[in-house]
Image 1 (cartoon, helix red, strand yellow):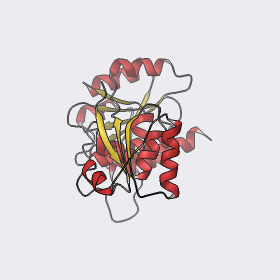
Image 2 (cartoon, one colour; image 1 turned 180 degrees about the vertical axis):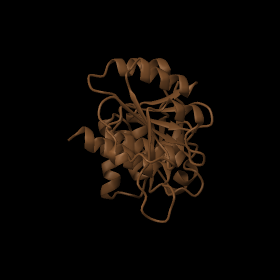
Image 3 (cartoon, rainbow, N blue to C red; image 1 turned 180 degrees about the horizontal axis):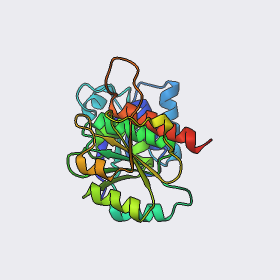
Image 4 (tube, rainbow, N blue to C red; image 1 turned 45 degrees about the horizontal axis):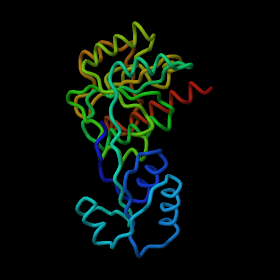
Length: 248
């Protein structure tokens, strides 16, 4: 069962309204009548939703303390994570090679939200993460994801190493991990065909069993002084290198 959550801000609310049935209630600032508010009201009308016009101080109370709600607050159904069985069913219905993103131990909701957004833009079929020591879907993730939490299947598995073995042995997916301490270059690696790109967590990277499951481990070439990139940035780079190769 999906739980209800509060979202706020023009972009987040507009995006949610475009997903059928996602928004359950909508409040807008009564005194605002500018173009952007009219766009929100039109989307609500198209979704069959009646907006409630309220004073700004009431919106201040509905939104989290200090939030810049921009005159718009909504109640939405939180997207629910899928399980292993749902992942198998999803892959069985694909008529193209699977393209997956695996996040091993990402704990910052901002990073997960950004990864989901990049995954949506890259056409990823599912994002997979372990249930333990990883952040799940929540209000911050959904806000940062800007609609991608609803559009990209997010799968949380009990045993990531077992899921990776299944992807290799049963689904024929090639597992490409990322780490800084390797000689193989991402840009010189074949990322076509059935593929899962694996990113490690913010501090320790991939766990040992995850790394051992990889068919190959590659690095993003770094020419500056910093040693690593934020996981969401690195995921975006890796995903779009795969997009480039898969579309050429």
